[in-house]
Amino acid sequence: GGGYPYDPRLSRDARKVAYVVDGDLRVIDVASGKVTRLTTREVDTIEHGVAEFVAQEEMGRTRGHWWSPDGAHLAFQRTDVAPVDTLWVADPSRPDRAPTPFRYPRAGRPDAEVTLGVVPVAGGKPTWIAWDRARYPFLCRVTWQAGAPLTLVVMNEAQTELAVLAADVAARTTSVL
Image (tube, rainbow, N blue to C red; front, side, top):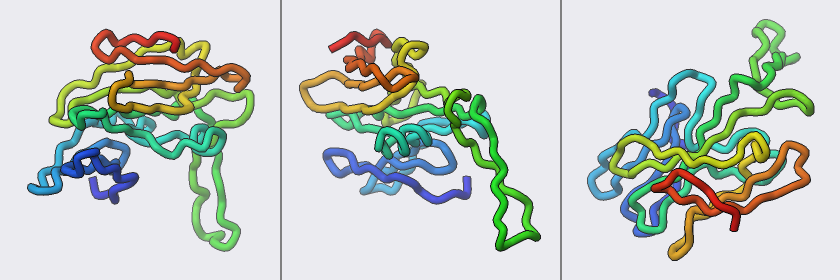
């Protein structure tokens, strides 16, 4: 795509940089300049590696991808905003321009569908991490530290209950910590 790099994240060994362009996650090797595209959007309503509106505004999470401790994998958020209402925002200072469509999650209306994948930095198919998304649709935090499992903090729709989950990437499952 012709977009601009967004949210660059340096690997722990400083040899690679992960970033998002046009809703897809990519990695560049610092020494060689070789770019590897890790995801491919199926449709325009899907983005990879970017925090959705609710995470940014309600949970203070701006990150949408995370390096594994060994730098061999990236965990990333997949967001599908298709269920979210579209609002049309006009610019009153530019009445000659058509309103701009904007996906805005309103209270009591459907939110974006958020899932979490893990992909090898060298490229390949992602492994999708399963959790009870019906009970906990919001992905609040993700951490992946040396000596610890990939850890997720998820929240219920009413934002009254949290669960801290350890992900078993190979088994594609989570368990409560």
